Picture 1: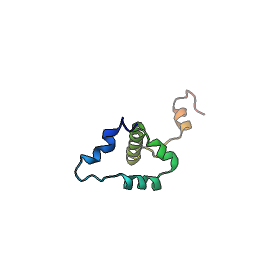
Picture 2 (picture 1 turned 135 degrees about the vertical axis):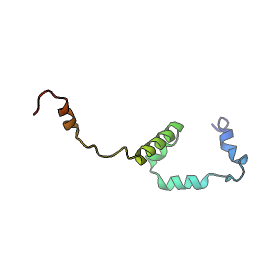
Picture 3 (picture 1 turned 180 degrees about the horizontal axis):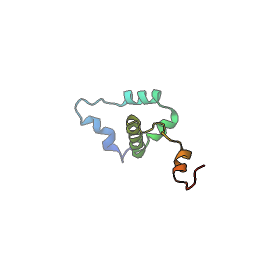
Picture 4 (picture 1 turned 120 degrees about the vertical axis):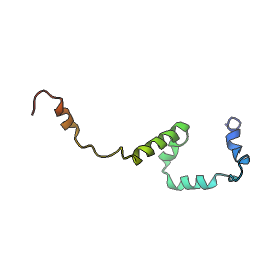
Length: 81
C-alpha cells in the first residue's frame, strides 16, 4: 500500500508551505467523528458521498414534505374516501 501511494504520502515535500505531517487533521477527525463516520472516509467514494450529502443539507433538500404519502396517493385514486 505504501509503495502504491508513495507520491500521495510524500507530496508535502514538494509543496511550499505545506505542513510536514497531517497530525492536526487526524487529531481533529479522531475527536470530532464517531467510529462509524470514520469508516465512511476510508475511500474516495465515501468522501465524495459525504461532500454530496453536506451540499444537500446546505441546500435544505431534507425538509419536511408538505403532504404526507397517504395524501399523495389519494390524488391518484379514482374514488375519494
